[in-house]
Amino acid sequence: MKYLDGFEQNIIGTPDENNSFTDGFSDELLSSDGILVSKIVDNLFVAKKATEFMPALPKNMKSSHIRVLDAIYKNHNEREAVRVSDVSSAMGITKPSITKLINELVDLGAVKKSISEIDKRVVLVELSSFGQECVQKYVLNYHAKLAKYFSKLEEEKYLSLIETIDFIYQSMEQVSKEEDL
Image 1 (cartoon, helix red, strand yellow):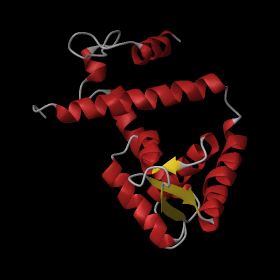
Image 2: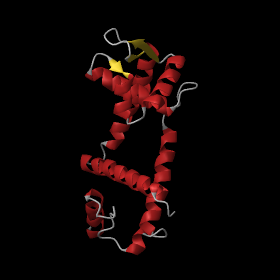
Image 3: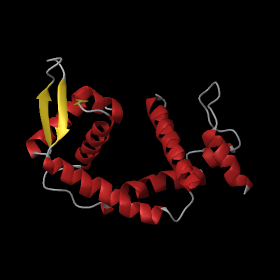
């Protein structure tokens, strides 16, 4: 599959001096009316729609809350005390945005906040029993169910998918910064 090999090499490659990743593709394929670009964009909408199949969340809880709970859970497994800044760094989200989400989770009873005894400027977070239940149901159990289906393909294909999604995200972010749209 020469076409797919070229595509994979292009994704894994690095941009040229113009931040272009077009090596190996004709301008027609990558143009705004090109088939490949159209299929990629269409499938981004399909991927977003796939999140609708996730389990229904408790009242007033958003999927972003579950991601924060998961980040707190994972950080807690790595270290005893989890700081708000740890969650912010792990998720790549600004501290003000994480603080807002954590405060919402405190209001929902899923997270407990405290001040560090060592450094009073540091805010620590931990999962409440309700937060732990949410992680168990909406992350661990759900991911275990998905893993049964995902095991039907080789791991390399999933790793390539992850890399490709990251590349597409970065490309779309770069295009959004260009002024000539």
